[in-house]
Amino acid sequence: MQWLMTFIASWIIFILLIDLKQIKYTIWAGLLAAICQLIIDNMAFHLKLYDFRYDILKIFNSSFFFTFGAPFTIGILYAQTYPENRILRLINVFVSTALFFGLEFALKLSGALKYIHWHYFYSITIDVLALMSLGNLITIFKLAPWMRSER
Image (cartoon, rainbow, N blue to C red):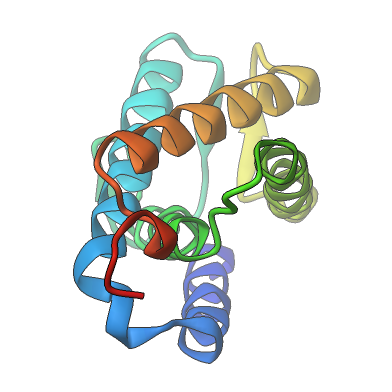
């Protein structure tokens, strides 16, 4: 149930904040974020670092509702709000990491996420690196609105 609630909350926030004119570009950032999350979580599952509980539907050993909830929608919104200023990009990484950490903490508290050989510090590190990588991909593929002439 926690995974479904995360999915619904992510999509409500997404619908409230999305700029539909930019979706044809920024959807790729959502897909990249979902793929990144699936790769990381699939490796963690096989290494027995943590486990997902109470999933209704699995995709590559991860919760489908999580993957296409938070990472997918936040990836799109991340691209749409990706700042031009480099200092703001760094701040954006840490703010987004804090939001992801809050979600993970809530999922762990609820019992939907079980740490086996894992610690919060590892999650924060992975989140920072994943968001910095996503930012690089956004830059390479020019997915942010300000990177294209058609604003």
